[in-house]
View 1 (cartoon, rainbow over the protein chains, first blue to last red):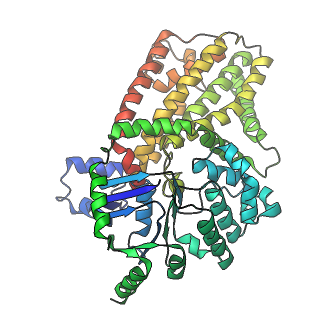
View 2 (view 1 turned 135 degrees about the horizontal axis):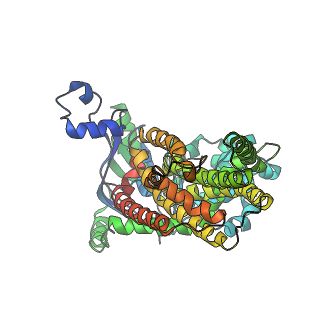
View 3 (view 1 turned 60 degrees about the vertical axis):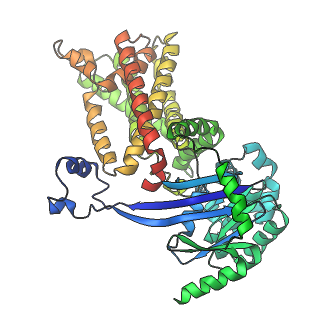
Length: 253
Length: 283
C-alpha cells in the first residue's frame, strides 16, 4: 500500500550569481574578508529562495491529490521532494511505494531516436526492465495512437503524440505513486480525456496520484483532496470544493 | 483541514518511523543502485554515440576513419621529419594517441557528468553514479571504434602483442576505474563551480604536449628523461601502450597508477558522501 508522509519539510533553493559560481573567487574569499572589499562582495550575497516552508502532509493509498497555487508557490518543488529529487535539509520524508514521476517530457528523448527507442528509454528511466517495455509495446502504441510513427524519429512527432507517448510509457505498469506536473493540462482535450479515463479505470485504490495544475476543472474531476500552496506553505489541505474556494479567496487578495 | 482522527493516527505512525539513513549509506546505495541500472546506462551510452553519426553516410566508421587518417598522416610525416623508423613510430603513435584520447575524453567529459544531465536530474530521481557509468561506457565505446585502427596497424607492422594483450586489458580496466572516480569528483566540483571545466580543459590541452604521445621518452637527453616520470598521465598511458606494443610496464608504473587509484577513490568518497544531496540544488 502506498503512503507518503512529509513532516516539517523546508526547502531552500540557492541562487548563484556568476561570482558565486567561480572557484577562483571562492578561494580568494577565504583569504580576504569579503566585506572589506566591496568589489568582491558585490554580487556574492547568499540568496536563497525559500521554496517550501514547514510543510507537513500525509497522503494515503487511494488518494488523488491535487496541488494548486500561484506560479512560484512551490508546486514543482513539492513534486520534486516527493520524487526524491530534492532531499530537504530540514524535515523528514517517508515514502512507501514505487515512484513514477512525470514532471516533464524531455527525459529519454533524443530527437533522432525512434518512438520505439524512446519508449524503451523512458521505461528504463522509470525503473522498468527492457523486457517489460517490449511486452507492453503494442498497448503503449495503441494508447498513444502512434501507428506507423513508432519507427520514425521523435522529432517528427506532434506535441500531442509526445504527450501520449510519455504518459502511456510511464503508466503501462500500474504506478504505486504517480506524480504529474502541469504539462498534463496543456494537452488537447482528447489527451486529457484519455488521461482521466486511465486514471479512473486502470489505477487501483492502492495507489497515490499527485497532480499539480492550474486547471481547476481537471483537478475537480480527478482529485479527491487538494493542497493549496502559497509562498511555499501548505495553507490548506482538504476536500476539493473547499480548497478551490480557499484558493479563489487567496487570489483575490 | 485534516480531521482530528487522522492526526491521532499519524502521530503513532510518525513515532514508529525508522531513523533516516546516514549520508554514507545513501552514497553507497547510490553506487549500488547506479550499477544495477546497467540496462539504462549502456543504452544511453550507445545512444550518445549514435547521435553523433546518425544521418551520416559512413555511420560509426566516421570515428574509426578519422582516427585512422590522423594517425596515418602524422605517423608518416613525423617519422620522415625526425628520421625515425616508421615501423617503430607508427604503432607507438597509434597506441599512444588512442589511449590518450580515452584518458583525455574521460577527464574532459567528467566536467559535465551532471551538468549535461541537468534536464534529467531535475525531473526524475536517479542514482548520481548512473551518469558516471554512462560517461565511462560512452568513452569506451568510442575507444573501441578507434582500436580498430590499432589492430590494422599492429597486423601491418607485425607488432608482437601476444600475451601482453591481457595486461593491456587490465590496464584498460584500471583506467575505467579511475574514470569513475574522476567522473564523480569532477562532476560534483563542476556542478558547483562553473569555471573549473575551462581550467581542466586548459591543463589537459597543455598536458598533451608534455606527455610522450607524439614523441618518445628515449628522444630526450638522458639527464632529462627521468622528468617524464613526474607526469602521472604518462604512467596511465604507459600502462596500456606498453602491453599493446608487446612490452611489460615496469613496477613503478603499476605502483603510481594504483596509488592514484586508491587516493582518488578515497578523496571522491569523502566528497561524494558530503555533496551528493546538494547536486540537485547546484544543477
